[in-house]
Amino acid sequence: MNNLLNFFNKNDKKDLNKWVHYFDIYEENFSKYKNKKITILEIGIFRGGSLRMWKDYFSSDSLIVGIDINPVCKKFEKDNIKTYIGDQTDKNFLNSVIQDIGKPDIIIDDGGHTSNQQIISFDYLFNHLKTEGIYLIEDTHTSYHSDFQDRQDGLTFMDYAKSLSDKLNLWYQYNDYK
Image 1 (cartoon, rainbow, N blue to C red):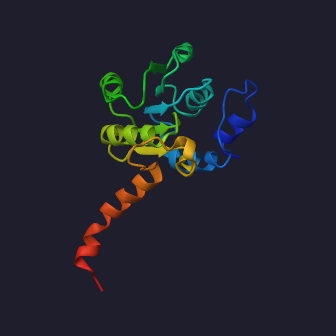
Image 2 (cartoon, rainbow, N blue to C red; image 1 turned 120 degrees about the vertical axis):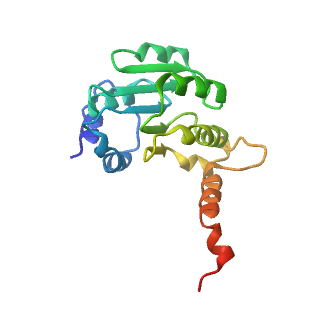
């Protein structure tokens, strides 16, 4: 069993809410960082369980950073866990966090889940990720639920991600290799 799923299953505090299939994805993508000093930034602290999980999983030298809009989440700051209170759509706030912590190795967006929040955070933070770092957005299924579609232009995160993929492959359309 992977260590993250084991942590989740043994979590008697019930302060960690994740889809079970995420744990294999985490393990597959994050295991290369396990015994290294890294910085991980997670948007969305909720009850603090994932901050505890990352602290348990990664090296004790790692910096675990959480962002949340709820001031109560400041209470989860201790040891190598640092918390920032602010809005994930506020680029000035995001900039102040990056200026303080430097470029993260891993960024996880488990914040408010609206299209606007996911797109603005990605647009700003992806450029501040370390080279070969990992940017993971959880709960992208919200792109298919009208309660989370809050943009005037109607763009969902999944539409946005598809447009990035299209841009990446645009050269092929113009060169039309056969």
